[in-house]
Length: 145
Length: 427
Image (cartoon, rainbow over all chains, first blue to last red; front, top):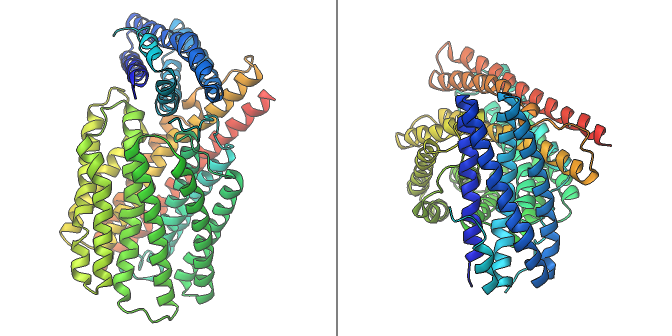
């Protein structure tokens, strides 16, 4: 069975992990212009990941394999939780609140980790099984690097 | 083909299930501290003394196993996509039996009361059996990283073996004719420390070390070999005790000790290569616990005092590592449950604090400082057993254990109160 969805979406998760860790490193150093740049990079990467999932992967998976609808719903509600945290992060960076930035990034990190685990162990393998050749096309929508 | 079991990913048990386990655990650590304070002159003289046996079981069952039960109910539901059947009832029943069983067994050991010992054995037998069946069922359906799940299954087997040998020893203490009882005690101890605790550290570590601090994954040679080596060593040791060769049975454990040592070294190396820069209290507890694995392995190889080994393993790792994990798990669960409700209820007018507000890292660091002082005092007491100052050191260590447990309990109470406050605001 192909694992193109699992591999490429997991790879994109790791890309976001690295960006989150880099943002934390910037916050520790306290260089605000650099913090703003890395926070925007993280925001853009995560939103793009959600977009490909919510507009491409999830609708096609739900269509091909009906029992996937319920976990997809849970994943989307966690995306909403993460979007709320990303908004908080942007506000904390604008007001240069170091403590808030640290706390929000920590919370976001843990939310992301448990979310990714569920996608990588349940949803993506399911999508690889259900979507087959369409998987390649969906995966190609993710950023190359 | 597609397996649809465990598809519903929204199976987090009610927060009260894990929190009940987490919040009761420090009481047992404080109780163990009280015994050390009261009987400081004898506890670390001999691991066979009545107060030493009571302290051992208060820490191993009351604190460590209690936290692990709560964490497993939570972890399996969320991470493995494998809900524990009837989790609220199984959780309550397990905890009630564990709490009462640990108290009665410890009191029976302390006071040499036959009826208490019997009752303790019975309650623990029932409670842990219910736990093993419920979690075992969930584990058969679990999905996830195979090496983690395998270590978890082995850990559960380790708990069963610990329980079985514990009951055999108990029967011997109560008067049943069991030849070579000392060998069975050693097996009870080996399965508890290596099979249950050691295997859990390995399984949990594979999962959370890369996850918590963004480190590279554990190397394949280790994830393939470590858990099976520990299990094989324990089985070999058990067979040798069964054949009556107790001396060789001890050395059969060597591969297990080496595997855990390798796990500790690899963990420290991975954590050095972590991407998340902050040194938080959870990381401090991981470092101290991995250091203590190496230190106690060296002490074991040098045939060091069993009492000191007990201090390092139980008060050091058994209390330390779960405490460090609670500093992440409890704030995250509080935040996660609240935010989930906020999103569902669309109550965005209520501001949610982030994780660190639930358990501030500054207080956590003070708690770690108290823990470290306690450990140094108790280790020194273990090395000075029989000296006039040994009892003072043990008593001071006992006071330190009470202080560290109280600080943890206070932080947990603050966290839970904050959860309840915001929960009420959300309506």
